[in-house]
Length: 256
Ligand code: 6CM
Image (cartoon, rainbow, N blue to C red; front, top):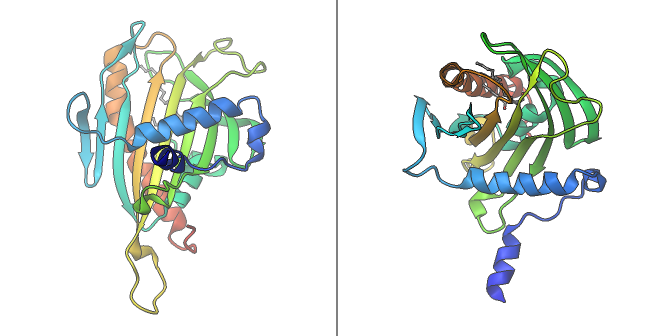
């Protein structure tokens, strides 16, 4: 009985978002929690191959193919000073910031506003020669996910992006090939206790970031070109994104 109690205590309590009434909610809730679990597993040794390293940033991939297409899972870890997990996740989730950090983006539309923590996006990405241009249709959900069994992981946030379908935006009808993605960003805030009678300032906070992604290119894309693009673009993305967060937050009050 005690073991059962402990187990259920580890599951974040059900969120009170109005999104729970949406037809996609069971999938959103399940995939978000699955991705949270997956992101928090240690990379360890074995199947993950380190392919990029810069300061505190480490990027790993596993070479995998499905129906002849490259679908290499990627896992990246980074540590960024001066920002909270909530701030970083909010910037990753919110449409108003996207063009400021997403270098592969050509266009972005919110096609459904499910609630203030759950949106459906249609994005077109810049064409990469010699393949066709790609688009992506995905729901995106942001949530605070404290782990009641880990005192260190109370300030824990996730954004989960998952491809979906929408009758008004069918795949592969125009010039774009639709890509299919499962992406998550998990952020944990660590705080150095401030000196007595002093307020916490940005030097006292650190954000531990985990980013996981699996992208299926959806149609023909030469494997070697795609792997070379990922090797170049993912480190560029994480550095650009985290620098953007630091810059956006530096003159604002800390948002826990
Ligand atoms: O996670 C990232 N961005 C999010 C917000 O935009 C979202 C989107 C992910 C889509 C990423 C796909 C971009 C690459 C498309 C290339 C398709 C293959 C073309 C064939 C080439 C031969 O989750 C950051 C994504 C950073 C990507 C580098």
